[in-house]
Length: 308
Figure 1 (cartoon, helix red, strand yellow):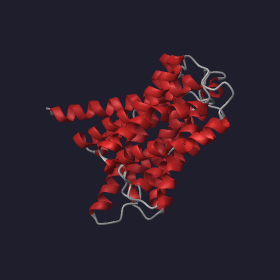
Figure 2 (tube, rainbow, N blue to C red):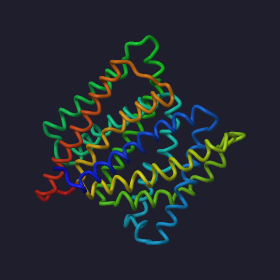
Figure 3 (tube, rainbow, N blue to C red):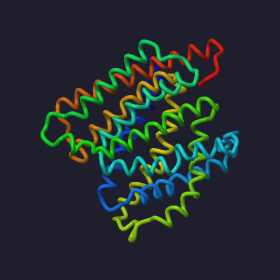
Figure 4 (tube, rainbow, N blue to C red):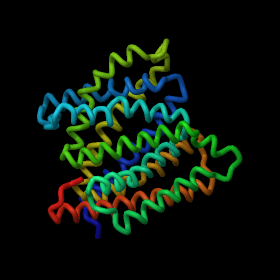
């Protein structure tokens, strides 16, 4: 019989996945309307900066990363405004499902590659099998059977943008693990450093910026600035505490499927049968790779090896 903490942990993990998967749909919807990517990036930090400041005032240690200045600067570059601006820009050239699938699918492959290249554990059979499933799923997804559907799903520039984004996030995860940085503290610190983006925004914002209905502006501030940045993060950590990191990571594999489903129903970005199969393959591969590589990391840590 499943225990109450297990059920709560699974529910929290799935809700976090739903929030993060919905973030791709919100970005796609808003960037296709009257809001420029640089405006959307600015609005994200309008939402998360006050919350981060409040959390830091309540407990200053939450925002303390205990890193050298260059390490902090590197993390801000990899996961701060530049990263979010890049992803939002990419959703001009890819559907919500395609963008989320590409980033989520590449992450475990890149994580295993970076880990092995820097002296970490090899992926193992499950990790490699998952990576092959992901690669197969991405290839099938990129070649739908419907006429003109491939071009409508993702353009070459969109592929390039999301590949770069996945590389940045994979490197970030590697450094966070290697430098033993609390992800929640990093979330707060990144928001507190976001005012550095203001001069860039003022210099390059388009004429008539933020010329959008108030509800679209509020949607970005609340959804990405509050729900994605903090609520999803806290729910994920809650899931980790109740069911463990491996199960929580397994639940997060559902993000691209959620993004594709919401994109179909909310934005009308329907997928064909081949792409539906590709999503199943990719999500299964992500879950298998995450569990396999996570087990290898845990085994290496238990053997006294330095985390990579």
